[in-house]
Image 1 (cartoon, rainbow, N blue to C red):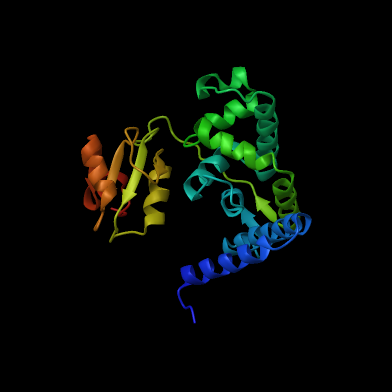
Image 2: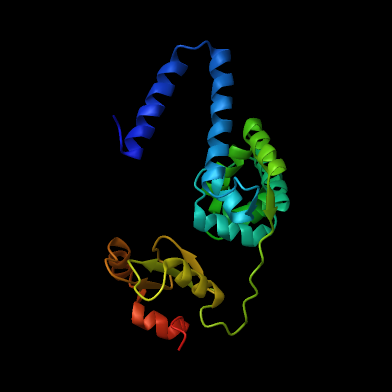
Length: 246
């Protein structure tokens, strides 16, 4: 008997693939569509949507869009505000990209492809590669049907857009949290960084402004050192952010 959740999942997927292989093409297509619908709904429930109410970022994160995780979903929620505007813009972007599929740089995407696609490409953490993956996803009719069906069943609250003061100490800074923090939860540290104007991401790059290094920081701290990115201890972070309530 399998007790590990990952092993259970792999076993289930293997059995499903074996069944699909022996089905006629038309039955296989119908079953794949049904399975995808169930998976989307179960994923939605796992993200707290089963009570009929959620927020834009949770909705976006739950439906399984390629290359879109929790952090990027939050950024997109801030960009588009409400779920209906977001979905409309995604569909427009997909249509624009289908009409203009040639290689393009994000700086020229709006002019060469279209305004909705250009806007999507220039959202923080998106870019052309992720935008193209999203456009492919939204070009699939059954994906859109499932999303619209979920939308009908849920109340998706619009995000409260952050208003950042011009003199916010971390305005336009990109912050990464690494390791275990002892004086606050990671969610609390993230929320405080965003209140101070920062964008919090999951990975360290040349664009990262600073990395908060807690206990057992691991690879992110090493990457910051390699790239010469500023690092702060938890104590330094608390002093900078005022997160300790002093």
